Length: 33
Length: 163
Image (cartoon, rainbow over all chains, first blue to last red; front, side, top):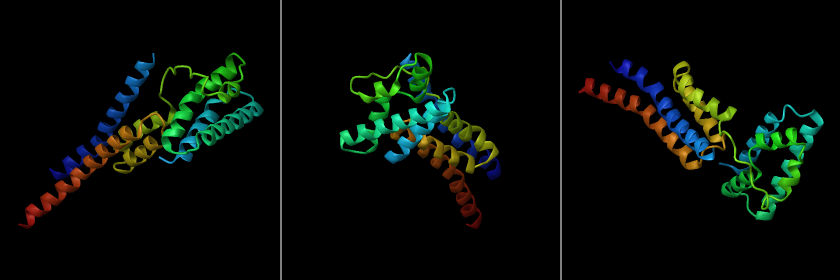
């Protein structure tokens, strides 16, 4: 149970941050156009 | 972020973007832009992050400088010599190799190299000049907070079994 949560949460940390940063860059490139 | 790191990153991106130019012109361009940055910073009298970012933003993206140099045969350093008068050409995309690398390390890297991958990704994020310090801090907090969650869960589970 705990191991399953670990496997799920560890990649999730990077993925959530990446989604946030990607949104920031996508918005900026849209604003510049 | 250290101002010198920002300048180094900018010059590195300029060098990477200038591959279509002849080698001697590449060196010349890098030297001209570098000299211009130093001149603008000494004129500003400060070398803090905000000042450096402003100077680099006025210069425009390295890709634009190279495109201007490669395409119209225009002297980019001449435009760079008067940053107050020159307006950077609007960039088509803020996505560079560092930004894509950072996002890949945060996503694919997190699966292939748990914990280490996202941490290297964060280093890339902090090296990049495309995100503000606030955005970088938010991304760092997200990663650290979510990575701490399993640690807390393990503690909670072990505490639960010992009681």
